[in-house]
Image 1: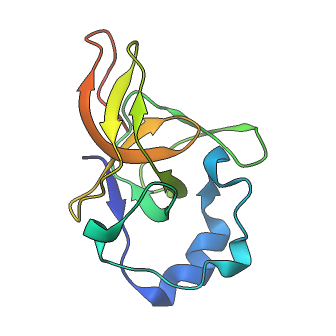
Image 2 (image 1 turned 90 degrees about the horizontal axis):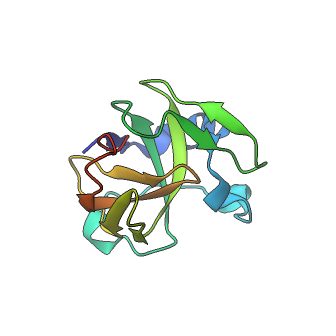
Image 3 (image 1 turned 180 degrees about the vertical axis):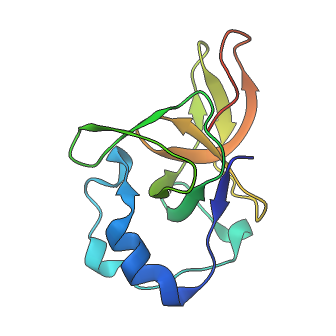
Length: 125
């Protein structure tokens, strides 16, 4: 797993303000993001996840909420939506978040747990 969830409520405001918000978050009211939960088992599709990039894999860029691409670097703070994805030419993943981390399933900002991938694709970010 390659995206490390962050835990402290004290970092929510400054970290979220400086994070790269993915395209999947484009309609989210950022002012409503006022706290963090560490109950990863309760994560549902559509929940927003604030995390830090632990390793660069297949997705070297993220599509921002504005639609513009942005390069990803190890250590970047990102806000992604928990979700499932099935793309035969890339990744299949489910909307589950693990305390040890998660996988970026789509460059537009879908985060979950990879269940399978196309052999021609590198591991997820």
